[in-house]
Length: 317
Image (cartoon, rainbow, N blue to C red):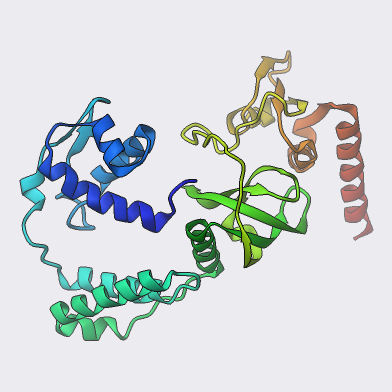
């Protein structure tokens, strides 16, 4: 099971110390020492060069790898004791106090964060007083994130009410969370007990969430590589054929597909796969005169019926 966000942060902080003491360390040795795969280590190394001693930029960790060994080129540049400017200290204090109020945060992590905040307040002096007049309120997604993060850490099942824009409906389901990740939005990958399949849930579409006492037991699954596309259809998914005019060629850019054949009018005949063909009805309505679903026939009929109902509603108004 994938590490949660807090565990990954702890690992990366330890990784900085480990690499400083072992210049030119081998990727395989470091991965083995931290109990992670080499791919997970490389993913951490992709993040570290964006970290440093100031949010203004500069003083970033110059760490890279050739796939075999890891090199840190400027360890001495970031070794000096950290000196926070007033605005940096204020931002840290406000953020720390806000995170400490998140529901679902493990008590041990909350206590550690409060101890660190107290030390920072003591060091910040008058700046701490100014930061106390500021506060941050997290939107609902923050609470959902905390509950998912806790469920992953404690390996517990979740109950969620989830909004599906494709069907325009709320569904209730139990899921075994696998990991959190961000691709534009924040998502939870989980094994859905309703569909008995791996599903991806966007956190801002979770209307309600509850941590259950049942242990999470997702099947052993190979984590998908999300570097190319969030949606990665399977070869076993149903095939859908969509024809678009010149104004609908963008579909081929946004939807992973098996093939896109040119049409005489400048459009495309796009063949794609999806585990939920019905979700493409909304695409057909969005395309309007710029496209249509060709196959399967029942989906094409369903899209035409939905379009006729929408037109009738407009005419009724």
